[in-house]
Length: 125
Image (cartoon, rainbow, N blue to C red; front, side, top):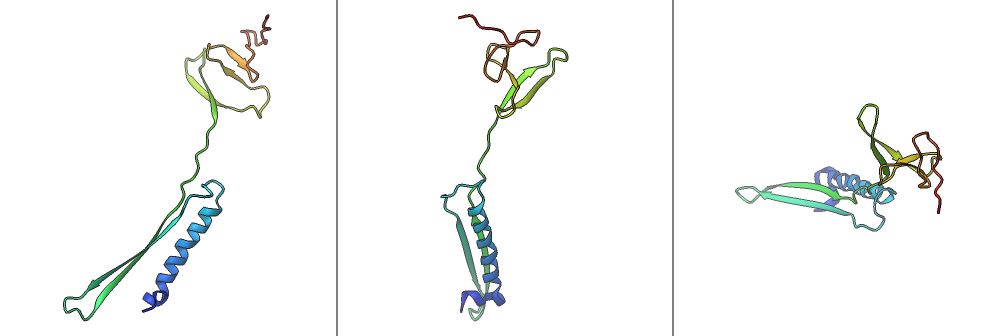
C-alpha cells in the first residue's frame, strides 16, 4: 500500500495542506526563525472482527511556532477634571509627547518637568 494513494490520494492532500501551513509559519516574520515545526501523521488501523478487513483513519496535524509578542510603553494617569484613569501609548517617534513621571509630575519626552502652566521647568544645578 502506498501512502500517497490511500483514500484516493486524500492523505497526500492532507499532508500537503499541513506542510503549506508550516512553510507559511516559517516565512512569517512574527514567528521565531529557528523554532522547530512538527507535522504529525497519525494512522489508526481498526481491524474487523473476522480479521479479513479493516478501517484506516488518517489524521494530519502540525505544531507551529507561536506568534511573537509585541510590547509598547504606555503612560497611565488620572484625569484631574473627571477623575477617570486613562492611558496612552508613548513613543519617542512622535515628537512633543509627554508622560507622567514616577514622582507624579508631567514630563517631556526628554524627562524635563512641565509646570502647571505647561512650561518646561528649568533645573538649576
